[in-house]
Length: 231
Image (tube, rainbow, N blue to C red; front, side, top):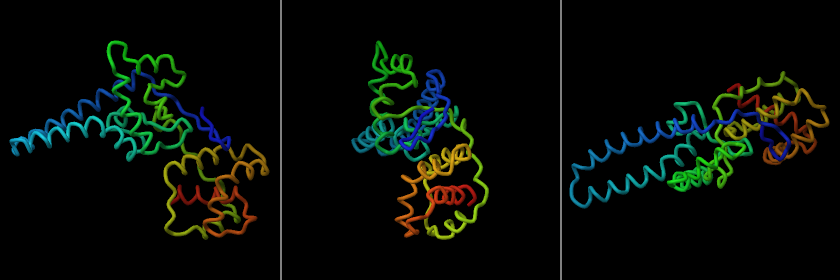
């Protein structure tokens, strides 16, 4: 379990070293196949141009593949997707580009022989974090382990708020995850506590959409979550 600064809890099952190793092997095989195909095509260029482009592709493939895929594909490379795991921030939210790039750049340090410090780090870390994870503040979890809660029952207050949400607004995955965690526990807490938990996040939208200052923050978050899960 990890908690946000607003005391909203996320429950995950951590991916262990064995599952992560399988994902890495799958990624390396796929990357090798892709690069081999690219090199064969570039071979037709010949000469220094072909060698230069090949080196660039190899460099980008090794250093950029993981960071790019994890940033753009919800924390998953093809290997991670194949075995059902993904990378998230240790706060429970989706990773950003900086985290995705940093944890993959440090992979070389994790795999340095003869001691393979990344493996040792995972074995002694409470959250199975390798050095790249510790530096980027990320964890690797079982994907789909947490079911998205159903939207709360329709309420006139937040139904009216939903009608005032700009048509162009589309919540990103990180926001939806945070709202899902909030919705999953809101029925177990008092109305006053709901408003207290919801206020830090809701105030941004109240100002951005010019809603009345006394708008119920709990209703704002419910309206956004309903929009995100029903469209």
